Amino acid sequence: MIIESIFILNLVFAVFTVFREKREISATWAWLLVLLLLPIIGFILYLFIGKKLSRNKIDDIRTQKQIGIDQLVDLQKEQWNEEELLPADAITDTAREMVHLFLETDNAVLTKHNKVELLTDGKEKFKRLFADIERAINHVHVEYYTFYDDEIGNKLLHLLEKKAAEGVQVRVIYDSFGSHGTTKKFFARLEELGGHAEAFFGSGRSFSSFRLNYRNHRKLVIIDGKIGYIGGFNVGDQYLGKSKKFGYWRDTHIRVQGNATDSMQSRFFMDWNATAPKQDRIEYQESYFPLVKRQGKTSIQIVSSGPDNDIEKIKLGYIKMINNATDYIMIQTPYLIPDDPILEALSLAAFSGIKVKIMIPSMPDHPFVYRATQYYAQSLIANGVEIYQYDNGFLHSKTLVVDDKISSVGSANMDYRSFKLNFEVNAFLYDQEISEQLSDIFKKDIEKSTKLTIEDFKKQSLWLKFKQYFSRLLSPIL
Image 1 (cartoon, rainbow, N blue to C red):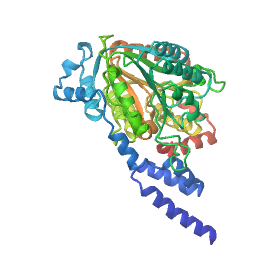
Image 2 (image 1 turned 90 degrees about the horizontal axis):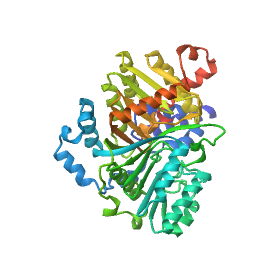
Image 3 (image 1 turned 180 degrees about the vertical axis):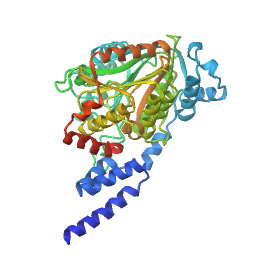
Image 4 (image 1 turned 90 degrees about the vertical axis):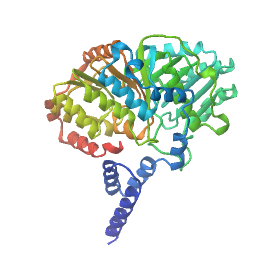
């Protein structure tokens, strides 16, 4: 009788808890499954993982102004002409439609004449980053999901402290969960020297503020408004290949010189002003948006997405690229947990004769996530998609390139979390040369990878298959 009463009460509270908040039906049923299968424990998990952002916090993020580019957004919308905005060798129907898509949904202005360098090795990335920061004379703005208190983290911190002591404006946003082990005390000396550091959504130490979802997964650095970094690398020794567990860390970042840094700067300011105390919020200054001469030939849109907006803008960009492909699609992602629209788009492309190639890691960093990735890999292989397992360490790169024409590099993975739960930022690049470089990098990575087959999955144990199927049921909340 007692057990029956507990079951009934658990069922009632589970239904009330899950259905009282608006969310996608798939996520609703996934949470209901967790709450029913794990009485009490499930409610604790929901408290820390399932709670949605407060309306006040969402409004605070939504109302931040796009400092420095508001007028340019209005100008491009009023004088919309794809032929004028895009360079001659990038004018295609897909490019026109994507530029318009991002301009309308994200106010993402198209910037031209940028110089872009691809960085795929952590040591090289930090070498270039440190050299650029060393030369900063006005400001250094840093935003990372992970900023660890380890060797490389301390090297970066000490360099920022040095620049702050020289009078350079230094601001740092870090995610308190992604940077677990890093506290406000870590940045105390930086703040004594005039710099500022803020944890996104606060320190996360209070019971009411702690949550595992809705993290700031963005990775941005803007130096003097002239140089920008965006991509997949965080700050930590493991990203330099120093982790025994992961080995070599394969990621993709880009270094940008040109007007695209204005869009990165504006994104940073919106995040800073939604995070910092009111007295430390930023107002427009010309020094943050200096006039930059033509540096190269790459056209870029910086596109953001997050739970503060119902439109999944980066995902829409992915779908647009996949649906408009005519030759090939190449994707690198550490987490392959597509929702139905992405899954259908990839399958449709493969059924239509498009060469669809996806690369995933050969090892997990999150067990449930990796098992779900394996499930979807098997499903996509059955639909004609080629899946490669990167064997030379851990693959953390988040790239998509289509037809040697358009590509994307950023922080967003090919999964539910990046589409719906985390704050992400990607660069969408309209440049044949950059697309060809990313394609060549993918082909070289294939040499260090294993192509998976249906037979590989058939050989797996029943227990492993069960974990994959079970993880798939939880995929909307992983």
